[in-house]
Length: 289
Image 1 (cartoon, rainbow, N blue to C red):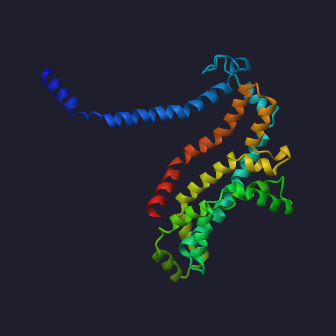
Image 2 (cartoon, rainbow, N blue to C red):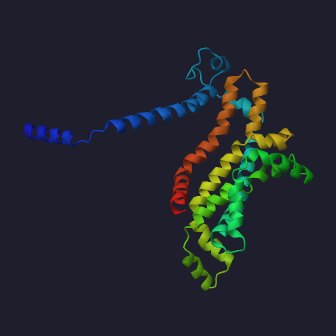
Image 3 (cartoon, rainbow, N blue to C red):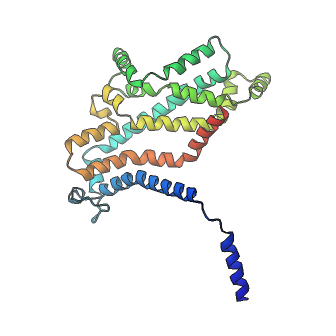
């Protein structure tokens, strides 16, 4: 019996697939790249729980000896970080909602609706993709100034309301929708709005999640445009608040890292929760387009 079990064990070991050298190398590279990318996040979070003496110690420590929440308490009690979090959340949510509304409708129109000059207009939009966004900031600034929208939430949101990339992304995905399905709904008496709301939107859900994540992350992390249009710190978003904090508390590294952790944590959680839908939208758009 023992000999028979030993033979079975040898057969199982023999049948085990030994990874090839390229597979081992690729796996090692991926593990190293993951650790390289995750280490700054780990160190930032670790330092945010360190007292000032530990955070400023040399050589730097990887783990707090006496962990504390004093840095977070100071951020929210004395630095008004809660207000800046709400500002960023409001701006990012408003920008995402408006971006989805305009980009989804425009992308669908370019993909499925027939109107004069559609292809030429879309080609012009594609050509405009090569123009750096920084070149449009000055004209947009003067436009908002004439409209008295400087130093307002609306002024911060305007650049995110519609994007050429968002229109292109939705259009490529919407091309995969069968024309027969849309035409059948019209024959049954559905209006264009009913076709869009009941048929198109449910089928565009993956790309809507992808575009929504793109827009939310861009609006949440944007620094340059809010810096240009906002002068009252009451309207500051988190990136501006962290920049102002760095000027006042440059030597307090623990407080700075706590502010950075507060800034990164919400979007990191959002991306992890929506990662499956986000990747599916990108892959579906690239294959179906």
